[in-house]
Image 1: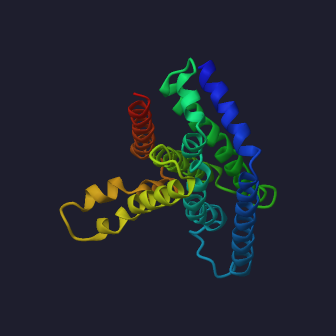
Image 2: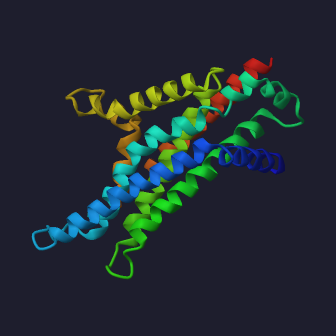
Image 3: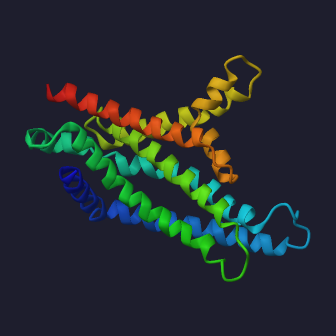
Length: 247
């Protein structure tokens, strides 16, 4: 555990000293703030005609979290593209292999480092709907479920991005490959809508299908298990890829 935390601290430091991280953090919060303020203004303007079944938590909070998924789909490949590809390109990956740490500790440490950045981003995002608490009665449980869904979704994004980064020495290729892979898995929701015997399979495999329940305030352990298994699978694939390279 000590080695994991040490690697995580180094990875976190490397992320936050990068101009890319601060640019991504600033631009993403600007976009989130724009979406949030627009949703609040629209809700206030339509409050008299608004369906009473649609509360402010659903209209503003869930709407913000739903839009955030698209932004995060673009951001996470950028934040994971350098995790292993840049190390390989600069030659420091060989030094990392020779260190007295296991490959599992290396992968978990770098994953935790990336997630520290993600949690900071999600924390700033969560403050936006929470700022309405003094003025309106928010469904905190529903917002918490949506935030949990975002955390699990970004864990899956990060794990997949790290695996793609372990396959190449070019960060740009890693970013494009990660985005393409995640988008394909995301779009499995489309064939799930067809009248086919395989539709339930596609629906289960789609990244976004499980998030839609959480953002609606429906907590199902099967959705959590899906994201945890997805994350564990790609972290394991990353370990296997690095093991092949080391040997």
